Image (cartoon, rainbow, N blue to C red; front, top):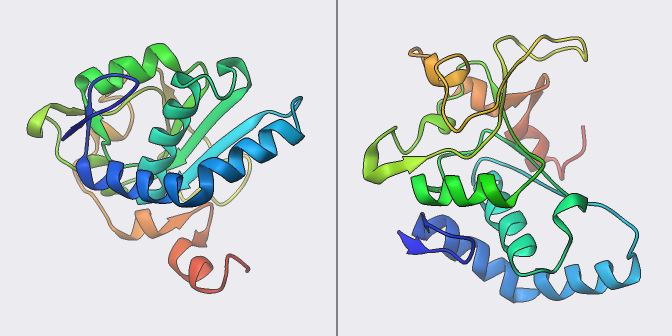
Length: 180
């Protein structure tokens, strides 16, 4: 694990992947767009590895003062545990609007396993214990880092639920150039 600017330690693989993209041009593009659109909100999102990187990105942007916290929104899908308990707590204090969406028995949000090297999720989880096929699909919101009332209480985990969010096969969608 590597120390993170916002606090705590984060998974080295996730952090290195984020830094590689951030330093290869995303930071410069972000700053240009931010300066060209000063009244806009910033929405940061991703699925799976992209979700872990989005979590790091939003925290980096707010902690570095690149964007106001009250205008920064983070929503991730199928996010693995990205850092340790200190990172989760620092993230919770830093971000005002942060939601991790989890589909039913998705296995990836349970990785690395709870307790392994002190990995911990940050707030808040929105758990759909259903197929997520309609806008009326019921969900449970758990406003804590880990909760047995949300997906942390699931024992029968599935990779299929990781591949499918809102009735769309994420892998097929990505391979089709994000077009359905």
